[in-house]
Image 1 (cartoon, rainbow, N blue to C red):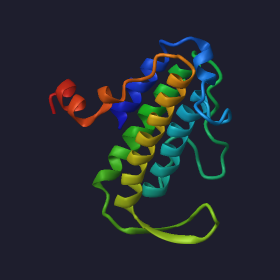
Image 2: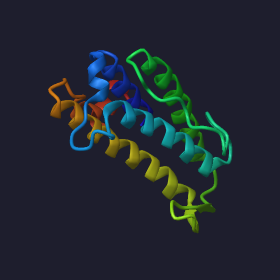
Image 3: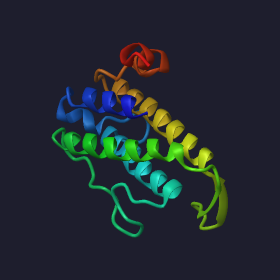
Length: 157
């Protein structure tokens, strides 16, 4: 996930400023919002799993929005911190954690389930990001370049 997030942000840094406002179907769900959401959500997932803040503490404001291509340098650094925090969670015991869901109900989730969801979540939103760019005529990130086979080839893992 860290590798795919970094490659996605690097691609976004090559695009014109207008690409950040590209969307597929919902103008509120534009490229800048999607990349922000991937990193901000990862921050929240990392805390839910470990109880250790990666970027923000519970109750703090979320990370700053992406407003310009220049902001992508910051979001790339934040993504690296969050992705490392999530990777560190792999070594934790797989216990059930109580947390509040979006409906404010207490639910129990396995650490491994939350970690898997964080990976799936980022993958899903990278696909939305590619669609948003393509819908508005910008060069989309090539999702085939972000698959596990490409990761294995590029990193020799």
